Structures are given as C-alpha cells and as structure tokens.
Image (cartoon, rainbow, N blue to C red; front, side, top):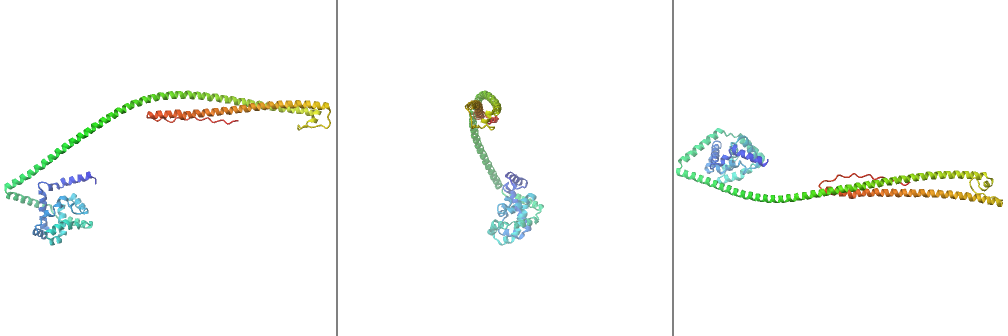
Length: 419
C-alpha cells in the first residue's frame, strides 16, 4: 500500500473508530476499557478473574498494548492482519473478543503462574504461540464465536462513569483542584513548548527562505549576464550569417559564371569533335573512293597490259613478271620504259594512299586528345563543385544553424571511345 493511502487509513481508524479517544483526557477512555474487560472476565472467566485479584494483577498491566497498538507491539503480523480486518468491519469492540479469546486459550497456564510469571507469560510466551498462521486463524475463529453484547459494554461504561464521579465526590476538593491545576499547568507548558517550537520553526523557515531568495537573486544575476552574452552572440551570429549569405551569393555567381564558361567550352569541344569526326568521315570516304579509283585504273592498266602481246609475255595474269628467253635491244628498251612508267604511277598512288592514311591517323589522334581534354575538364568541374562549393556552402549552413540540403550532382558525360 502506498504511504498516502496508509496514512489515510490511519487517520480513519483514529477518528472514526474511536482509537484517538484512548489517548485523550489523561487516558480516561482507556481506563474505561480496562474496567469493561475486567467485568467481562468476571462474567465469563470468574476463576481467572479471582486469580488475578489474588495476585493484584490489574488489566492495565497486560492489556494496555492490546488497546493502544491493536496487538501490533508483540504479536506476529499474520495475526495482526486478521485483527485489523475485523476492526475495520466490526469496530473497537473486536478488541474485547480477541482479548477474551487469548485469556481463555491461556487460562490453564495463567492459573498456575504467580505475578511475575503471569507478566512474563503475557510478554514473551503468549505472542510466540501465534507465530504459526494456523494458530492465529483458530484464535480468530474462537474470538468471533465469543459473545460480547454492546448493551453490557454500555452498562459497564455507565458503571465506570458512576464510580469515577463517586471517587471525585469523595475526594477532597483541594486535592481535586490541585490535580486540575496541575493538569492545566501541564497543558499550558505543552502549549508553550509547541509555541516555542512553532516560533523556532518560523524563524528557521524565514532564514531558509531568505537564503533561498539570496540564491535565487544570485542565480537571476547569473542568468541575466548569460542572457546578455547570448544576445550579443546572437547579434554577432546574425551579422556573420549576413556576411556569409553575401559570400554565398557571390560564390554562387562565380560558380554560375564558371559553370556557364565550362558549358560553353564543352559545347565548343563537342563542336570541334563533331567537326573532326565529319572530316575523318570525309577523309575515309575520299580514301575509299581513291582506293576504288586506283583499283579501277589498275584493272584498266592490267587489261591494257594483257591486251598487248609484248606486255602479256612480260606479265602473267596474276601480275608476276615473266623473263622472256630471247629479247632484242629494242624490245628491252620499250619494256623498261613501260615498266618504269607503271612503277612510277604505282609509287605515286602508294604515296597518296600513305598521305591519306597519315591524315586519318592524325585526325584520330586529335580526336582522342580532344576527348581526353573534354573528360579532364568535366572531372575538374565535378571536383570543383564537390570540394569547393559544396564544402563552403555546408560550412555556411552549419554556422547559421541550418543544414544545407544535398546538392544534386551533375551527371558525368561518358567518354567516347576512340575510333
């Protein structure tokens, strides 16, 4: 059970069940309970009551803790829980039931004990008997079966009040006034002590409040200083943010110009590459045409050579040179002239073909070089965007308290393979 609920139950028992009255007016109500218990013993346990009278053993000597603490001082909790449950259901009269049940179950031992033995039995041996939960349960069953009429308790209460009034009347008025005066003095001293305690608590509270107030003022001064410093830092931060925004705008403008310049260079490079590709294509076409023309001319020459008797004897159809067995000087001279002319024409055609191939190779090398330059330029632009602009922009955003969203990366154009 939480502490708050336990305290509420305690207050309920003290006020609504009459337990608080046992502590008031010099324990008058408690002595009335003792008187009622002795009357019930005289009625239900006469031999034990007579034995207690012989021993001068009064109820307040053994039953005071039963009423004031609800059996919690000596008895085990397993028994106390049952008693408190019955108390909450039936009221304070259940204490008389439990007390009579304890006396009945211990009657034989108490009748054989003397004054000291009886007190020791109530203090030590009796609580030990009910450490077992089964014994406590049987005791509660026996207590519930004992009849304690409310009318008899009221009757015994009236008898006690009558007896107290007769005692007060028989008492000397001076003694009564002295006792009343002593009681009032004690109450006055108690009230003065409470007043002193309250005054001391008030002074202590004032001192504590003053200390708390001083600490709060010191803390407020510190917080004010921190607030001023924070405001100053905020102004400086805003100024720095403004400067960084201007720098960012300038950087954006510079980057935009560089990007435009790079794009224009890329466009120029692309145009040059396209132009070189076109030139190479034209050169390839021209070379193919020249090779076809040369082949046709060669076929014509070969046809003419084969048509000539003298030439056909010198060249075979496969183009190999035949050495005639018999040749005259004139024929030798004509054959050498024609041979030299054909060789010269062939060398010219080979030279032209080699020049065309050289131009084609140079064009290819130039195209590859332009491709490499274009790829290097794109890599430099990409690296500049990633390392310079992005890091600068992120540092600016971090300083101003906002994180810049990631910049989209421009796609890197694929490098064209060399043809």
